Amino acid sequence: MIKKKSVVLCALFFLLLVASAAWFWAAGQRQECNPLCFVPPDRDEAVSFVVLHHFSSSPEDAISNFNKFGFSTHYIIDTEGNVIVIVPEDKIAWHAGVSFWHGEESLNRISIGIELQHDNFGQTPFSKKQIAALKPLLQDIIKRYNIRPENIVGHSDIAPDAKPDPGKAFPWQEFAQDGIGIWYDINDADKMENYSVKELLDIIGYNTKGDDLISSAYAFRRRFLPEQVAYEPDMAMRGNAIFEARFKASSLPKGERAAMLKNVPRIHPEDDGTFLTDPLFIKTLRAVAYSYKKARDN
Image 1 (cartoon, rainbow, N blue to C red):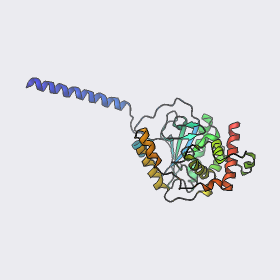
Image 2: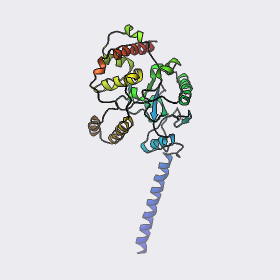
Image 3: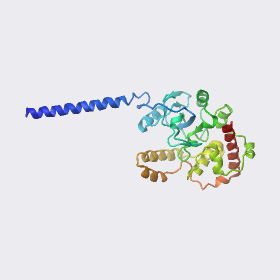
Image 4: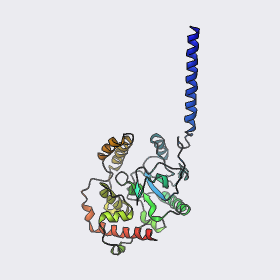
């Protein structure tokens, strides 16, 4: 009996050692929640993009959700203009997800993410304090990394079927006037060759493969023709539903994930694409494509 007890005690002691070793190993892969409870990976590629986002909760709740879902960003700017560092710039933040811009995919590895607090998905003006804090931050990032103006994008630009960030009320034209990003002169439309809608969106940088043509065209309108995009009171509900469905799909095998994602609604309202032939849309698209082509040619 004594021998059996000794064997049991030795076995328990061994299991305790294994569990302790596992705990210490796991602890080495984590960090105190300051503010994230996980360690962002180091970069091994140069930063060449900035991606603008928005979040509708408090900064504290946003950080809690980062830790809950494993997402992150480099900066948060609240409505009072306070700039909060979440992930150092030399680390990769998980903010862009499935993304595409002008041939580049999976932009997390080469981008800096900035989240702007906004209570209705960027559909009404951002606070003056927030804009005043964002401009110098972007100008500094652009200068330090020599980021090209065509690579200042919104999440809506790089993931047009799923994200509306930073929203139709974001003042892209004002920022372009301060050397941040690109705007357009409508008179330049006549300088652009008569390409198709798909070709013009491709020139700018949008993903037009498969079903993404209308999504990308709608994202284009949200950024460059916001007056054509109606205020959507149910935007938050649809956005949250899309996020939850995509998050669930992310844990499925590839085949099942693709099947599930086919049934996930788009972030924009259902549209038959008739706006693709609207004269003002076409003219603006040509003018913007000219601006982006000119920027890349320089």
